[in-house]
Image (cartoon, rainbow, N blue to C red; front, side):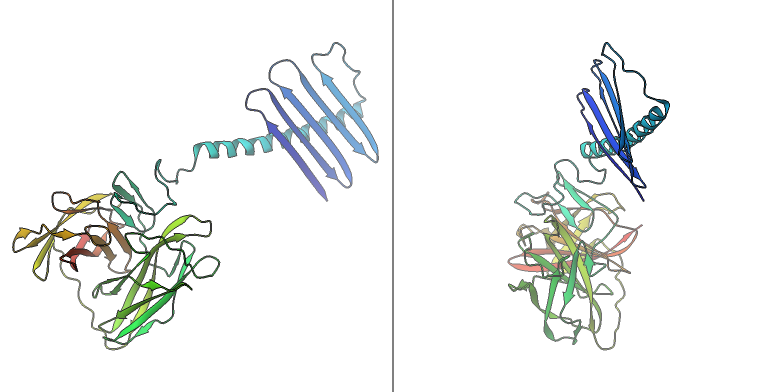
Length: 381
């Protein structure tokens, strides 16, 4: 059995470097140490070997007037071995220390941009447009995003969505209850208020019909409850969109998804054709802009009544509109919030498409205290 022990210290002011190391093999020990002063005044090296209780020590001082007699050949060989081992350990440990120094000074290439706190997801007045989904950052009102979407799993970012039931009867209101567990498997109770609510619950059937945007209430034990009516048979997807501290205390935005089942004959609805105009009661809603994969582009939504722009758009959940995009096929989820103020009477979002494919857009807006949703099909090439 053998062991190697080494330690080093580096003075970056160019004054001194000190290294030491020891090797123990079959009960024997070798100890070597060296120091170098870069001011050119002195270099001192020493080595010692202890074997069966005997020891040999040698030293050299380059600025001394007298030089000690050389040690016997056997002792010189042992000392050279000790100094070699100590120097090797010094190089290894010194390289590790410099690597750590460079990493700390340069930071990680995957970190948040300067001025953006990846852990702070609270939204003060004046917050710019941004998306809720993995790998999103906001800088100066412009959002950049990765290629991932949220809601594909009931567990992500250290959180797990645990519903109390997953079955419903068609057309019947039932309480939908669930908890969000942290990495310690305990219910999370400290959620961050984002756009006036600590948690957004979005529900849609897997054919992208039946969209609902709800806001459950939480009891002190961390159980969320909301009345939920699923009108038709089929498989529905529920998304819990929230921000909460993770296991390290960092504010983390997450979207968890789970399937809900409504028994009965399932008659899927075909995805409507792509269009830039949708009718919602007496209102007509249009949008301008073309989302691209991985590139943030503006989308502007305008609301009309009787052919004229609606001047009475109201803030809903702290903003003039909210946009949810669901991807056909896997129901990948992106929740987008707009710029703080209207732009030429339009609600302006910044959006990057996660991938090519078909999407259903759901635009929430409020007029005269009533929230409505305009739906669009988007095809991303």
